[in-house]
Image 1: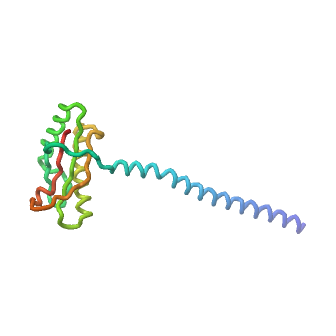
Image 2: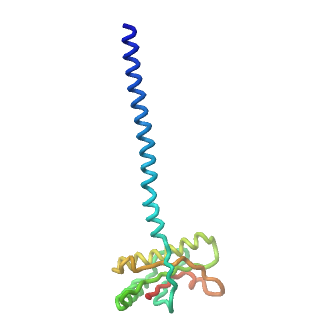
Image 3: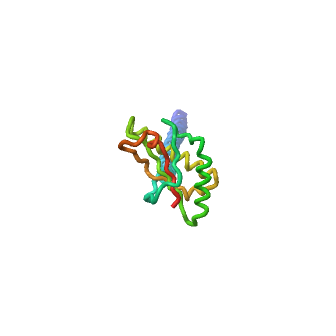
Length: 161
C-alpha cells in the first residue's frame, strides 16, 4: 500500500513539474516572439523620421515664423498654406520641401527638436488641407548662424519644387 502511495505521489509531482516546465517555456516563447515582432514596427518609426535628401532649389515660396519656444502654427499660416497647396496643384509631379530652422542659442538638442516639431506642425496642416503626405518632404533641421535676427531663425521654409 505504501508503494502505491509513493507511485501516486511521483505521478502527481511529475505532472506538477511538467506543468511548471510548460509555463516557463510559454513565457520564454512569448518573450522571443514579442522581441522579433517588435523590430519591424520600430523600423517603420525610424523610416517616418527619415529626412529628405533633396536639396532646396530657388527661393522659398513661403516662410512661417514661430514664437519663441513654440511649435504652434502662427495665425497667418492658413493663407500661406493655401498658397502652397495652390502652387503644388499647378505643378505636376512637384513636391513640398519643408526646412525647419533654429538659432545657436540655448540647448542644441532642444533647438533641433523644436525645429523638427515646427516642420511636423506645418506638414500636418498641409496634409489636413488635402496635400498628400507622400508629397511633403522634410529636411534635417538647420541652425541659422551669424548676425541674422532671432525671428528669422525661428522659421520653417516651404518650397514647391
